[in-house]
Image (cartoon, rainbow, N blue to C red; front, side):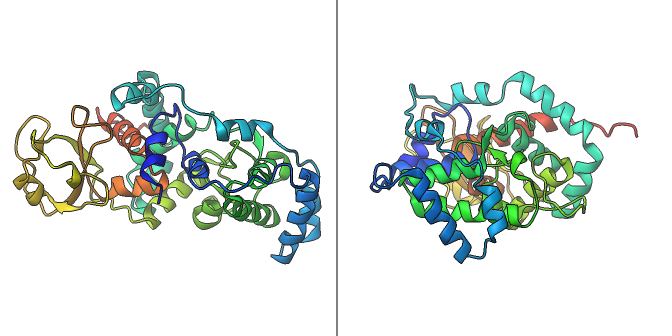
Length: 343
């Protein structure tokens, strides 16, 4: 779980992804840098020895590290500080502009039958799959341009949270050894997030799906695998297709801020007694449902009453901004309701 400060930092990024949030942890528990202690080349040799002890074969190691390089871009990106602070009112229009909503609806309609099939199989509403896809990589257009092995080796060598990135690196080597992708196509973000859903390697091993049955879990190019992998992640983490994500609400002027937060769960009846109301001022729904009040900025900004599915989105990325952007885009996809296209 990220610290409060890490969550705060995550709010100011222009584009958020599950992997970026993980990498923001680095500045919270920094250890001594490896840089300067041994050469990058020597570090790679040591990594190869350790990887071999973990079951990675020589052929995979030779191919994986043949063109490995130190990526100064990864170090720069890791250490970069945000230049200005965003609020939800400024972030949402940037993360979910009207052109993205239009593209999301077009993508939903284009892949309607595949999404419907996958949604039914995994118990995840298709609009949330499309929304995640859109927020993470702009529907597969922005998946990163760095060789994953180089990115992860660089981050491990840097020394901050070395164990974290070594673990991701060994997982990436397993992906190559299992034959899911060739090295020349093993491309991702500066921190090692991969494919159209931006999975870190361990998430890939845990959640990626070979939905089309070709023997490869291709989250880079195969829509069926991309959508099924996202759905599988959500379902495995506790998604409930019978519920939505939440709603914007109002809170009383004397609301106790200590009650806010994703981990403080109460029934809607309990929130009603504490003065929480729908955004239009009317009473909360009289249903047997639990939720949390989240205040991403402060009491003068947007306030939400969110349910379990929102909490699952925060497993994907521990950021209120990210979860709210995905939720908002899912609502815009769903309204007006899109009818099934003709076959």
